[in-house]
Length: 262
Image 1 (tube, rainbow, N blue to C red):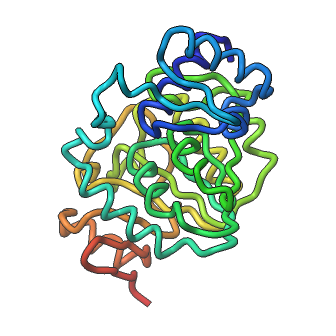
Image 2 (cartoon, rainbow, N blue to C red; image 1 turned 120 degrees about the vertical axis):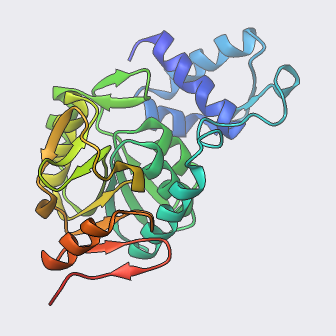
């Protein structure tokens, strides 16, 4: 990752977290602590931050004290948090899990922040940053090409590295769910890395907002039957509830948990 991209990541993390450790940045960005310190020195010279022993503190004198994240401005923020609550109950201490990229999985990360001895594999730098404040959570990022718009790692290098791991549960966020077209996402790159993620998981758990149902995004991941479980909101269409029940697919919503027919 080149210096301008690292600087952008560091700024985003500090705007969200206000403080970050050098060691956490080194792990997230996959560069040496020496390189991170040089980046922090540059940002300190720009008055963006103040370096401390082992980390850096946002210079809030130059910024509003209350800086809303993109998530907090999201009209579906509460629905995403509801999904995060359900996922939190599925994740236990000592688990090895995967969180694919996306704002709903970021809300899952917010909900599991107090877990112990958790290992989380993710290609989303926002998720990695969220979890980095708990030293009891080991965060692994696969490297690869940085999509600066989403702050996620994609591409052949990321996919190759994903294949080196195995996880008990993969939480896969999708953009579309359709009975005929299956699960879909917005880009080929996203679909490609998600397919690798599914292959290394004991359980595939699909995560999506209710508005994803009957939506068909650009690139297909696979049929509805590929999921072990689905987590969503209560307002999903009745025909999907019936389909899941008839095909023995477990699905969970904020107020109810349904299980497919026996």
